[in-house]
View 1 (tube, rainbow, N blue to C red):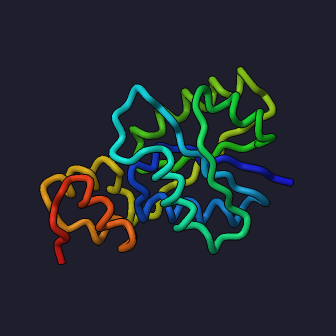
View 2: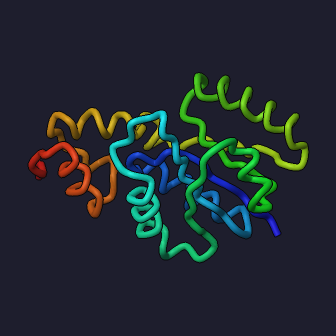
Length: 163
C-alpha cells in the first residue's frame, strides 16, 4: 500500500491546495493531509479549524484523511507509516528549498521519498499568504478559495463579503 503525506499549514485552504490533494490522491492508495501545528507562527485559523475545513473540502475523496501534527515532518511520516511526502512546486524558488528538505529527510529516513508535483498553471501564483493579504483589505477572494470558506475568512478580518 502506498501511503503518502501532503503536509502544509493550509491557512487557509486554497484551490491550489485542493488541486494538489485531488491529484495526489490519484497516485497513492492513502493520502494523509497533514496540517502543521506550529505555535511559533500566528495563524489566521486554529489547527482545529484548518483540519475541519480540509475534512469538509475532501469528504468526497475516499482515500484522503486529514490529521494534524507538530514536530519534524519526517518523524510524523514514520509514525503513520508513510513512505512518500508530496510537495507542490509553484516556481523555481520553491524547488531550491524543497530539494534541500527532501535531501535532508532522505538522510534522516532513507525509507521515505519526496514526490514533487508541479502546481496546475491556473494556480501557480496562488498562496495562502496572497489570500490573507487580499482578504485583509476586503478584496474579492472568490477566485482563490471555495465559496464555503469565503465568509469564514472575511469574518476573521471582520470584513463584508465582496460579491
